[in-house]
Image (cartoon, rainbow over all chains, first blue to last red; front, top):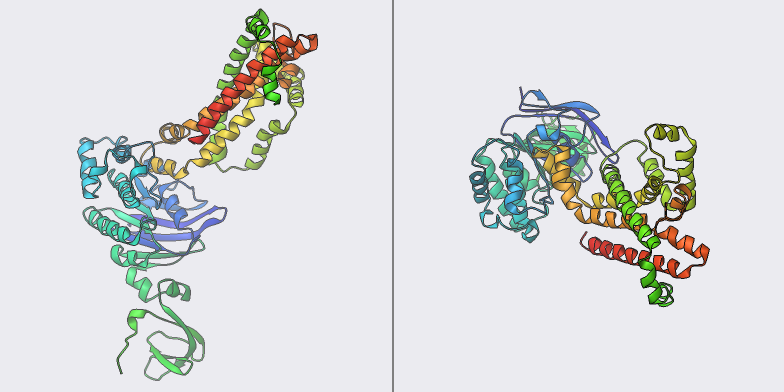
Length: 283
Length: 237
């Protein structure tokens, strides 16, 4: 039985919707969700955490149906791209906010330990509006992680950061996640996040889950021209031909490319070629 | 110039004399008591209604908003007439009467009239205030283990502080200055249901300009203070 199971999730919120989304995750999986703007990625996260009630479908976490469970009972953390720190609290109080509801001892040492791990221990007395974007994002991460959530959801956590800060925060996140046994779902527009952090990837478009699988599967065996294009492959159009030795040959304006994929002889086909699969040789 | 004339025309000896008169003291006291009572009642309704209109999706929300805003567009006299019919000629009158409550031509009527006049303004300000607060702050609080009520208490309410102050001030100013609705529902009885605008009206009717101008000055000062506090609160919103 999987750690997280989403079954035919269907939700409609005006312009944003999800259509029969299903997938499963195992414990310690790191899923990156990619897709164009308006694909329903944020709604998916907010439905899992319990902010929106699905019209149809179920969500199971550790074999328990949490579809109608209140958000405060789910123990799922969420981090947004705009940090969403509580402006009337200090950094310390922001991190401590979730812990106040937990029955655990040594809360202060836990907060300091987490702050230390994320290099924000020198900022604990500060107000959120006096911090840089990278610092605010690390505070948001600390606040979500300090309560030991079963599942961590992140909505484009690095997109508001400059490239250098984004890279540093990504490395920091990778280190923190590797030390815990947390399962993560992370929305990103940066394909590097998938390679650097994830073991699984999902592609959403117009509320539908187009493909779900291992990272290299999505990148190397995309199921449609849209996915191939979205993950950076070059798209070409040609005609399929049999070449005699069991391979399919695709004729693209006179240039013939061989493929192990099968296609009906004479049919119009689309070919996707990843940049790393093109070998340029000097004359 | 029109505002300034209120302070230039009357004789200040007259104002000093009138402000300590029994009628003015009665009117001022009744205005303050009813104004504060109505403001508290208005806020008790405006906070949850404003929050609900800002945060929840429900069928007929547009219609509810229109109905709530309607009294803003109504002439006060029409609103007063509606309330007089509601509390004086419907089954509600009998239900309230059996509980010992009568709004028609009583001090309670002043509170009811002020309440219904100020409520739409207070709801509008509270809705805008909650619209301005990022709902994701509440989402995060819920995900960290806090119930909807706890989240409202810990997050939404403190962040809405300036909006609440602004809403209270505007409500109080509306309550103190309400004339038409009070006149129709509670009547304009001398030293009975006489609040400041009624004092102004009654004394103008008798030709006692000094007293009328004094009530006008007091009302003006209250309004000025209210707007001043509102502006201060709005700047820091």
